[in-house]
Length: 200
Image (cartoon, rainbow, N blue to C red):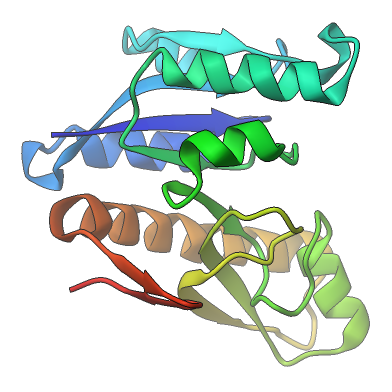
């Protein structure tokens, strides 16, 4: 059974989707811990209700970003995860974290990368006038949403879409993709050749 550690910043709807999937033994994974960068991240309660250990590692609690990165790395390493999942975690990790978990740290992003990186994917897509938006699951590297792409799902942009309606439809597709591909990765493994990610 693969060990998942999930990092969140907010309500934890992607976390909930993973928790629900892990309830099936055939999924092949269990969430062993949930970390957040904010004490008021309401998604922490989702883990606590299931008896899953949680921790908070806030940037403001450390004198430097490097100290925060080291503390986050240590907090995650204590749980010996096989895969770390950024599920709405809105902080960029640093070199120490990537040295420990690079190649097994994945992020779900609400745009079709390499278009619209950063935290405003749906609004940027609407402002640009694209006809198709979507979500990307990718490995995290030292850039902003620049790591090798694991999977993508397209979501049509409707003529009457607002940022809220488009965001909500992307979230639904994003959750399905996250659960499907994390499950495939832990059950089947993966390879990365340059930028090409292959799941057998």
